[in-house]
Length: 161
Image 1 (cartoon, rainbow, N blue to C red):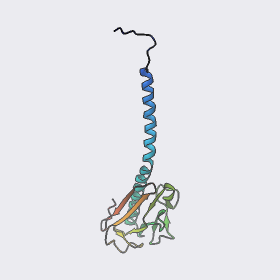
Image 2 (tube, rainbow, N blue to C red; image 1 turned 90 degrees about the vertical axis):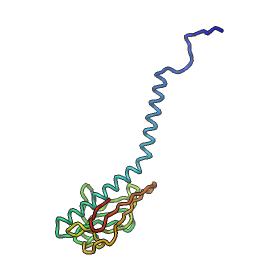
Image 3 (cartoon, one colour; image 1 turned 30 degrees about the vertical axis):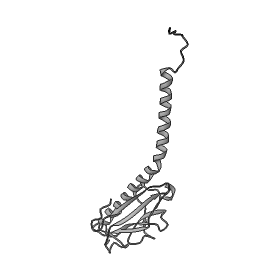
């Protein structure tokens, strides 16, 4: 048996193999990033909600007026308020362009809720900050694409997790 080598060998060059692998890697990265977008939006929105609740708590502890956060009954938005009036004394949250934080634009919704804080930072179930929570308050944020997070405000201490 004799092996004959010719100049016209069939197959791929190492450069062609590397280019194909690189293209497959780029396409995979783009596809995976697209899948994680909705969960990233949900996680970021949860962190922003927590920051807004902490902001209201901090402002209540440093003022005579009670501060709080109210989630809309339709679950599409929430806003900060002061002076026990979630309808007329709406406050723009830090870093926001509008008074109400619209979750519907992000394909998110949340459970309806109201929480206010007294001058010691204790969470209350009424809008005036005068009736401390009797149990922990759970706020659920849900993505319309699937997935949800629960924000818990601990009674007595106001710890937000």
